[in-house]
Length: 314
Image 1 (cartoon, rainbow, N blue to C red):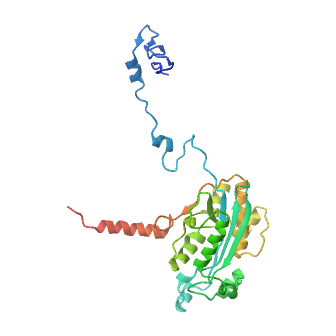
Image 2: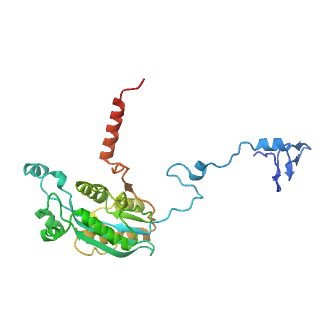
Image 3: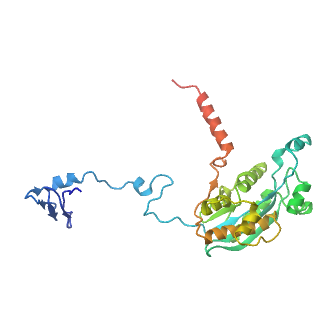
């Protein structure tokens, strides 16, 4: 334990105790315990190790919050989405021999969304959206995907291509004060896994030369949140996970809208049991490449290799 010199504050009263410096009241001079008198200059030098807090002290390092920071604000709305897309159950070699390109598997054929208001604790479904989508490069559905989803060839033939469906989706969002063209801090897309946005939507839009809209540049993977919050991985598929929480799985599985509605039950249960939806779990960089993806890592390696090949300027 060390007693430091005391000094009076300017325009106020200062009280301190110290060895040799003693106790001081007002004015900056103190009367020492041992009879010595501490000068204002010696008192000031004794505290010279102190400094005003910097912006770094207040903000902290990246991803670090200080105790006196305001709590992060929860999203007011979550858009739960579960796309259905073209697929088959043929081995890769069989597809290649038939002339089908693996890249065109994964075109969206159902575009659903369920809007959940988190302002009404623990969450409440307020509206839903659904459109069937006509694939661009492989318009004929496989028997496998028709049996899996119950989506018919007639439904996709009557649908619009993805850009027009995206426009209709934006019109629906604007009724609720949202838009695909705005990365709204109050709203975030939520999916059961990363593949819906990170792979299927992103690549399907690229086929139409449409960039990923700001609304979809970040999203919440509810599988990841499940593991984080309940300390166990979800197993058995979406239907099994919904039932494990004590809910009925309503409707036919692998219908995009049905899956989205049932996934919203998981999101609401997470909130009810204490999870706060305050940030996305995944997103894309300025080039539209997902963080942590193989594509992004390869691009970074290629860029680094190109920089190393540049001749040095002497």
